[in-house]
Image 1: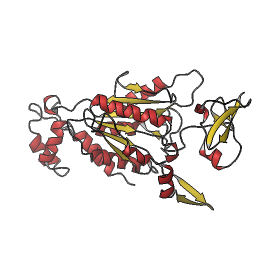
Image 2: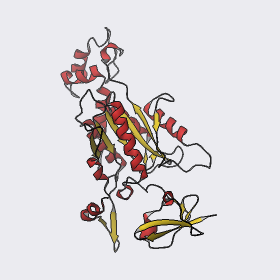
Image 3: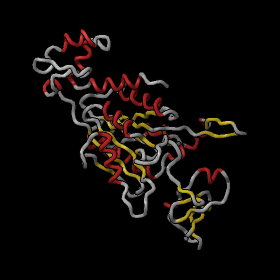
Image 4: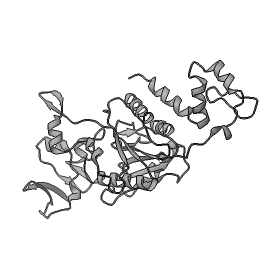
Length: 331
């Protein structure tokens, strides 16, 4: 089996094979622990450093990965989607975990001055020059990821608080380290659960576009992973097969981006059966005839009828209840 070695020439990393022949920079898939430990390492043809598979990270979006080829594809796709859909805002849910250092067994955050000097912070994306889309605003949900429930609560709260023009779609970009949870193995913080994807989809507005980062999982040689993951994405959103689309780039073939646009909101009073959206009580008249008296008698403690009716009429009551549920979760 061929092995490769990394050497530095005038401050530039150079990869050579066992015959000392220069190789493509695409082989620079190395891990920080291998360098930090100052120990010899080698990268084989299967993408292993000292026999261990490497990937984008071990838990969440990391500052050390900021600006790699995947980011080039990622933001190229996002800006183009914003342009194609006329979106005014891109919201990146970063699943972020700040860099840390350890000294004598004690953990410390990476000094801000160091991160600023080397420009390795995912926060820098908000300065992206949007070129032919100057009206696109980039927002970053940068709450640290440590507890899954607490993080989801923050995400839902921030999505609900977005101030976006009702006439302009918003791109909601979920950027986990790996992607969707594995179908059989136990998921980690590097994965997004199907139930979490469903919750986020349900609180999104009509016409908004959900974009999802998916890294290729470890599969048998020649096995397909894109189609199964795309179907998993569609099922979590309640979409039919083929409803979600895919984007990718040639400089980062190990990742894809699934995306889907949510159907526009409608006046639900014209299409929904005569059922209370809170308790499923059936009304005897046409549509929601009688809901005012019913709501004031049964559900006024949840929300005054005048406010609740606006949500019910627009079909937003389910979204509101999901947000209330998220807010009641313990930290």
